[in-house]
Figure: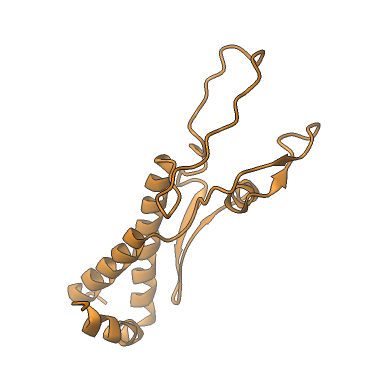
Amino acid sequence: MNDFKPFDDQRPRLIAALSPGGRRRLAGKIAKQLRTAQQQRIKQQKAPDGSPYQARKRQPLRAKTGRIKRAMFQKLRTSRYMEAVGRENSAVVEFTGKVQRIARIHQYGLKDRPHHNAIDVQYAEQQLLGFSKEDNKLIENIIVMFVSEKNW
Protein backbone atom coordinates (compact mmCIF):
# COMPACT_ATOMS: atom_id res chain seq x y z
CA MET A 1 0.00 0.00 0.00
CA ASN A 2 1.23 3.48 -0.82
CA ASP A 3 1.90 5.58 2.30
CA PHE A 4 1.32 8.75 0.30
CA LYS A 5 -2.13 7.73 -0.98
CA PRO A 6 -3.97 10.34 1.14
CA PHE A 7 -1.52 13.00 -0.03
CA ASP A 8 -1.90 11.94 -3.66
CA ASP A 9 -5.67 12.36 -3.34
CA GLN A 10 -5.30 15.86 -1.85
CA ARG A 11 -2.52 17.13 -4.14
CA PRO A 12 -4.77 18.62 -6.85
CA ARG A 13 -6.79 20.51 -4.23
CA LEU A 14 -3.65 21.77 -2.51
CA ILE A 15 -2.25 23.09 -5.77
CA ALA A 16 -5.60 24.61 -6.75
CA ALA A 17 -5.72 26.40 -3.37
CA LEU A 18 -2.49 28.23 -4.14
CA SER A 19 -2.67 31.79 -5.41
CA PRO A 20 -1.72 32.33 -9.08
CA GLY A 21 1.62 33.77 -7.96
CA GLY A 22 2.19 30.81 -5.66
CA ARG A 23 1.47 28.35 -8.45
CA ARG A 24 3.86 30.24 -10.72
CA ARG A 25 6.62 30.13 -8.07
CA LEU A 26 5.98 26.42 -7.50
CA ALA A 27 6.08 25.72 -11.24
CA GLY A 28 9.31 27.74 -11.50
CA LYS A 29 10.95 25.67 -8.75
CA ILE A 30 9.80 22.44 -10.36
CA ALA A 31 11.05 23.54 -13.81
CA LYS A 32 14.48 24.54 -12.48
CA GLN A 33 14.92 21.28 -10.56
CA LEU A 34 13.79 19.25 -13.56
CA ARG A 35 16.24 21.11 -15.80
CA THR A 36 19.06 20.28 -13.40
CA ALA A 37 18.02 16.62 -13.31
CA GLN A 38 17.79 16.48 -17.13
CA GLN A 39 21.22 18.13 -17.47
CA GLN A 40 22.80 15.58 -15.14
CA ARG A 41 21.16 12.69 -16.99
CA ILE A 42 22.33 14.00 -20.38
CA LYS A 43 25.83 14.41 -18.91
CA GLN A 44 25.76 10.73 -17.93
CA GLN A 45 24.65 9.89 -21.50
CA LYS A 46 21.53 8.03 -20.33
CA ALA A 47 17.92 7.97 -21.49
CA PRO A 48 15.10 8.62 -18.97
CA ASP A 49 14.59 4.86 -18.58
CA GLY A 50 18.27 4.47 -17.57
CA SER A 51 19.55 2.88 -20.77
CA PRO A 52 22.78 4.34 -22.22
CA TYR A 53 22.81 6.39 -25.41
CA GLN A 54 24.00 4.69 -28.56
CA ALA A 55 27.71 5.40 -29.12
CA ARG A 56 28.87 7.80 -31.80
CA LYS A 57 29.74 6.39 -35.18
CA ARG A 58 33.44 5.92 -35.80
CA GLN A 59 35.01 8.57 -37.97
CA PRO A 60 37.15 7.75 -41.03
CA LEU A 61 40.83 7.04 -40.39
CA ARG A 62 41.93 10.07 -42.37
CA ALA A 63 39.86 12.53 -40.39
CA LYS A 64 41.27 15.86 -39.24
CA THR A 65 44.20 15.46 -36.86
CA GLY A 66 44.26 17.20 -33.53
CA ARG A 67 40.50 17.34 -33.29
CA ILE A 68 39.20 17.37 -29.74
CA LYS A 69 36.08 15.30 -29.27
CA ARG A 70 33.57 16.31 -26.67
CA ALA A 71 30.90 14.18 -25.10
CA MET A 72 27.65 14.17 -27.04
CA PHE A 73 25.34 17.09 -26.29
CA GLN A 74 27.88 18.83 -24.04
CA LYS A 75 26.89 22.32 -25.13
CA LEU A 76 23.26 21.42 -25.68
CA ARG A 77 22.72 20.69 -21.99
CA THR A 78 23.91 24.11 -20.78
CA SER A 79 21.47 26.58 -19.25
CA ARG A 80 22.02 28.84 -22.24
CA TYR A 81 20.23 26.41 -24.53
CA MET A 82 17.99 24.58 -22.05
CA GLU A 83 15.27 26.83 -20.70
CA ALA A 84 13.19 26.26 -17.57
CA VAL A 85 9.94 28.23 -17.41
CA GLY A 86 7.32 28.14 -14.68
CA ARG A 87 3.88 29.38 -15.66
CA GLU A 88 0.71 29.49 -13.63
CA ASN A 89 -0.50 26.12 -14.90
CA SER A 90 2.66 24.45 -16.22
CA ALA A 91 6.35 23.86 -15.69
CA VAL A 92 8.28 23.62 -18.96
CA VAL A 93 11.83 22.51 -19.75
CA GLU A 94 12.68 23.06 -23.40
CA PHE A 95 15.52 23.76 -25.77
CA THR A 96 15.69 27.30 -27.13
CA GLY A 97 16.56 28.87 -30.42
CA LYS A 98 18.25 26.98 -33.23
CA VAL A 99 19.22 24.02 -31.05
CA GLN A 100 15.56 22.96 -30.88
CA ARG A 101 15.97 21.48 -34.36
CA ILE A 102 19.05 19.48 -33.37
CA ALA A 103 17.39 18.26 -30.18
CA ARG A 104 14.23 17.22 -32.05
CA ILE A 105 16.26 15.23 -34.60
CA HIS A 106 18.04 13.28 -31.85
CA GLN A 107 14.96 12.96 -29.61
CA TYR A 108 12.88 11.25 -32.31
CA GLY A 109 15.63 9.69 -34.47
CA LEU A 110 14.97 11.68 -37.64
CA LYS A 111 17.01 12.21 -40.81
CA ASP A 112 19.11 15.34 -41.31
CA ARG A 113 22.11 16.67 -43.17
CA PRO A 114 25.15 17.34 -40.95
CA HIS A 115 26.12 20.21 -43.30
CA HIS A 116 24.68 21.59 -46.51
CA ASN A 117 26.82 19.49 -48.91
CA ALA A 118 26.31 16.18 -47.10
CA ILE A 119 23.80 13.45 -47.83
CA ASP A 120 20.97 12.71 -45.39
CA VAL A 121 21.97 10.78 -42.27
CA GLN A 122 19.57 8.74 -40.15
CA TYR A 123 20.22 9.55 -36.48
CA ALA A 124 19.56 7.10 -33.67
CA GLU A 125 16.74 7.92 -31.27
CA GLN A 126 18.31 9.33 -28.11
CA GLN A 127 15.82 10.75 -25.66
CA LEU A 128 17.19 14.02 -24.34
CA LEU A 129 14.14 15.09 -22.38
CA GLY A 130 11.73 12.82 -20.55
CA PHE A 131 10.42 11.79 -17.16
CA SER A 132 11.98 9.10 -15.02
CA LYS A 133 10.71 7.68 -11.74
CA GLU A 134 13.24 9.85 -9.91
CA ASP A 135 11.82 12.94 -11.61
CA ASN A 136 8.31 12.10 -10.39
CA LYS A 137 9.64 11.67 -6.84
CA LEU A 138 11.51 14.97 -7.16
CA ILE A 139 8.31 16.77 -8.18
CA GLU A 140 6.40 15.28 -5.26
CA ASN A 141 9.14 16.35 -2.83
CA ILE A 142 9.16 19.91 -4.20
CA ILE A 143 5.37 20.16 -3.83
CA VAL A 144 5.52 18.88 -0.25
CA MET A 145 8.33 21.29 0.67
CA PHE A 146 6.59 24.23 -1.01
CA VAL A 147 3.23 23.62 0.65
CA SER A 148 4.85 23.07 4.06
CA GLU A 149 6.79 26.37 3.84
CA LYS A 150 3.55 28.39 4.00
CA ASN A 151 5.07 31.21 1.89
CA TRP A 152 2.46 30.95 -0.78
